[in-house]
Image 1 (cartoon, rainbow, N blue to C red):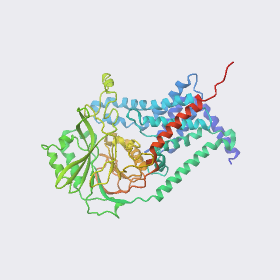
Image 2: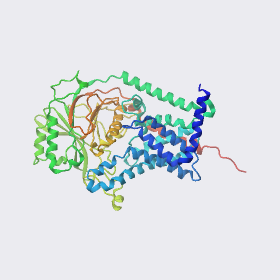
Image 3: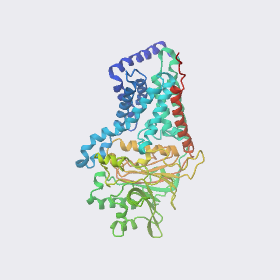
Image 4: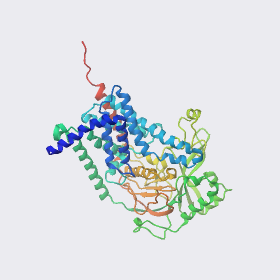
Length: 558
């Protein structure tokens, strides 16, 4: 039991918060809450910042004045704005690549993107203020469920932008991150928000009973940590018989569209592809150090030319590719290409090509066209409307890209079946839904291939956060991930979300690494029952609304 002195100190601290709310105001406190929560994410790793969710709940439960819904929207909006301002400041780097042309837009982009995403947090604030009770465990449940519900909507609507959900505050590969194997990153978000927001509903005046929510939350986190540690210790990760080479040339985005650099870029990729094997220490027991890799992976947008230009019979690069690979060797590379859509119109695709050397002939044997495109980066949403008001597409191909078919596992002769994810697609849980048939798995891939162009991020927190978010796909599916970028971070991630030792090619590093792809682990619970999770969370979120308002008994008037 707590001593009288300690209970008195905690009670005094609670009393001090009311003047704090009065002096700072709900909007400033909300901004502080957003900043704290954002700093919990890698690379900052300030996990006490997760208490920001408790501060946000505390503000929403307070007196919001004569126009509570308007004030609740402002509270949610400012919390979200600061959260995404810290999380997404890297967006300015995309405009500084061609600073002379687009540099003036960088400050506007840094402000506009967080403001657009914060709109979802503002809507959450309105829903909470309208329907939730203002104290007790019910308020905590409503806060966590509806907050995470709006986060799921944010990751889906208008093609989605699922950057930095609360659950990804835990570094992928850590003990608590292993809960994603059971409930996915959004389920982990629910646990995280509910646990750290519980501090807002403690009642010191009730003695030990008033601290039950925090004690239950601490117990829940301890259970999550214990489960994760057990999974990390007891799950054996072993190398397969397939070797892969990651090539990272450290070609910055500003150089890729310079015509004079093209030959040098091609030479760098060819030289690293043909270089002698250099296996990571992790695979020492199973690796033949003289064995050339079975698969070579180049990143998204590796060469500043279209597939038509690269493989044209009249192009000197076609001869380079004809001599690039050894017999039965495979190259995976990112490239853009022209294509015809279903209506017969010429469109551009962001594509992953699979190239093999078979019977003394180099052939393109498979292609995957990116399904999830980056809004305002690879295509212009509401193009007709936004073009009229002067908003232009910022990609180098004027018409932008057109999405391909939905992502699914691919089977190519001579290599293990794989799930292709191009850049932005690594942020989306369950993009491949072939396994989700209510516990009856379909054809399961053996690894994830994630090619990305993280050069757009520059030397910011972007590459670290992008890797962390993508690594959650490995945890959710129990699959290893091979991730290739032109400027870093290129890594091999094991099925538990951990970076394989000695495989990390960091930001600004040029080089290559060979490694044996890890074997898959048992299909996760999340992998089996994703559809059930989505249905359950949706129904539960909707039930809470009538439970708190619509089904309340109506007082009769005489």
